[in-house]
Image 1 (cartoon, rainbow, N blue to C red):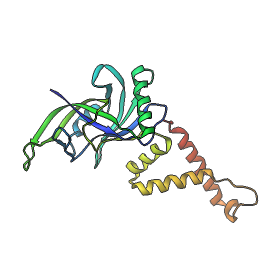
Image 2 (tube, one colour):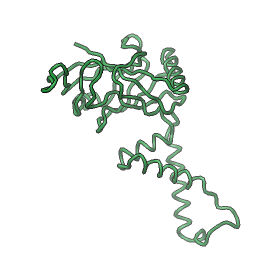
Image 3 (cartoon, rainbow, N blue to C red):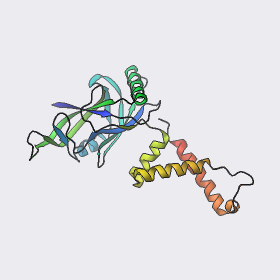
Length: 226
């Protein structure tokens, strides 16, 4: 039997390419349906699907508006990266509403469609269901969310895509990531103006810095603006 759970999305950024990311589900919190999703519940379904899930409008299988292209579990919950197909009229409408929600400080809802594979009653509160394993089938953009802790982190910009890489692949925390991006932007903006060059500008350090700057520009250019 297919079940549905909805979550609020709080958007911090949005762009015109239709890409967004955020938490489709959070671990350890009791949602309005009395369920708690436990860490590891999505592990098998992520391996089997490789993170590819259809994105629907209000769970209507005849109204697909995009595809999820990346998904993984971390300490907080199920992180997803989705891409709306802006060639589809409904997807364009949903994208426009996401941007409006961001501009006015509103909440965009996300709802997952899934099957419960393994569940247990909470030993202290039997009315609470602990979801041990679920099969994720799709997720939808919806009007009214259920879980109050999940949300969109961004609908991605270049800086946020690099920041997500620094967090996930390098292991930086949020403060370190912000500092790294600020330093990278400062380095890329540096201009060697006549009369302002330091003593090292004619030596190997200058050449290394110039090569690093060029490499960073190439990296930025390969990241699609979302």
